[in-house]
Structure formats: structure tokens, C-alpha cells
Length: 215
View 1 (cartoon, helix red, strand yellow):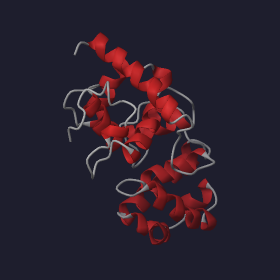
View 2 (cartoon, helix red, strand yellow; view 1 turned 90 degrees about the horizontal axis):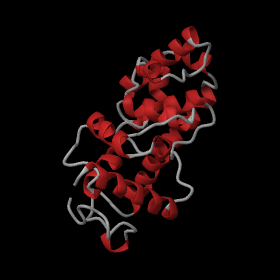
View 3 (cartoon, helix red, strand yellow; view 1 turned 45 degrees about the horizontal axis):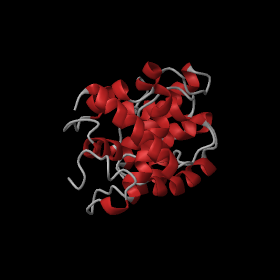
């Protein structure tokens, strides 16, 4: 499939998913940028639903960046361990909050490279924050995104997140990227599933999908 054909396919997929999931957004609960930074670190190998429950206890005890920066790693770990990988996540959150406090006056930087320099923040997390918090162009290549864009034929057999991201930048309009990726999460959970066969018969993309039914 030529790039121009992929671009047309991408635009059609974007429009159909908009109609199917008009209100799709981030499934992590947050009301401040630093809280999304914490939640996205906890979400590694953990469900968003569990993270949303666990962080309630974390914020009750440590209600702001300063409090979390001053907390002992062990105290953070005790609360976040239900999310798995408790020690490494607690260590990263502690280090990250200290940097926010000392270098950015408690604020989350709105620069992609600055975000990447924070402990525990990779491209996926940085893109999520750039798109959701700051409204800037972003493509979040999580497991749903990677699985779906391969099945749809938007990328060809790519599994490495950064490579998928770079390919999608070529065909997804910048202003659509963030919402498109959120809609892929909804679609991946409800229709184009990973642990069962995808429900192609009820998929809004079944007549244009490049790899219908392929696992």
C-alpha cells in the first residue's frame, strides 16, 4: 500500500472512530498535570482502573508535589504496590517530584525533551502529557495502538513503539493524533481485542481494515 493510500485510509479510520467514540479521552483520572505524570508511571503493566483507585490513597496522604517530593520512597511504595513493580515506580515518582519542585517550581514542563528527561518518563508518557495536558500534537503508542494500527494496515508488521510512532506521524494529521490514540484504546478494549478473537462482525472498520481477523 502506497503512502498516499495509507494516508487516505488513516483519515477514513479517524472519521469513523470519531463517530463511534465521540467522547473518548484519557482513562486515567487526574485534575492536575503532576497527577497524570504519577498515574502514567503507575499504569505500566497495570490497568488504568486500578491506578485510579490506588492514587486516591496516595493523594490523601501526599496532596501536592512538595509533599510527594518530601515523602520517603518506602512510604510511597507501601501505597502504590498494588499497581505492581512498587519499588521502581515509587523510586521514579519520588525522583520525578523532587525535580519538578527544584527545577520547575512544582510545575510539569510543556517541552517534550524536558519530559523525557524525567525519571520513569518515556515517549509514550511524554506524548500523553503533551496531548492531554498541553493540547499539543501527540501520538501515544501503547499496546492497543500498536496492535490496532498493524491490523488495520496503517503500519506493516511494526512492534517497536518509537518506530510505530514515527510511521504514524507521516499519515495522521498532528491535531488528530492524541484523540485518535484514545479512541484506539476504547476500540481495542471493546472490539479489536487482544485476548480473544477481534469482534470483526461488529467493527465499524470491517470493510476497510487492512488485516481483518488477523491476530
